[in-house]
Image (cartoon, rainbow, N blue to C red; front, side):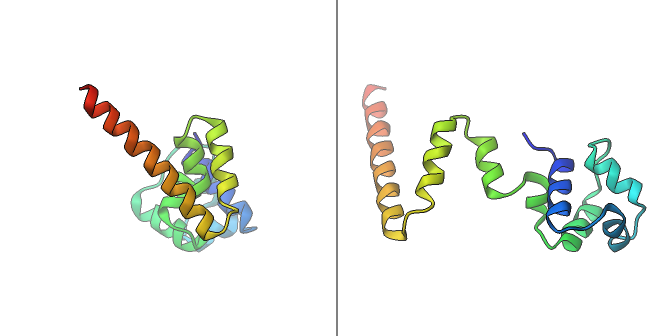
Length: 117
């Protein structure tokens, strides 16, 4: 699982902002940013808000990563993750068909489970 410090570093690097520049934007010393990125310490919620604003991302993204990161950290089946990534390139109508198929399959399994209980 990716940590807050890892996410902070990923976002900061993606935006091409140095630790010093980020620290200046949130009115703190660069050593604090370094400590966050190394997971030595965690920021307060107030500092977290400032970091998110300075990096123009949500607090959720800083804490949990992007949607893809969350999915990969939540879903343990790599084959399933690959299939979901392939589904993302389909057009909207095709995506709805995949969702309908999944919902129908899961509904069937739920009904079977209820009947056996």
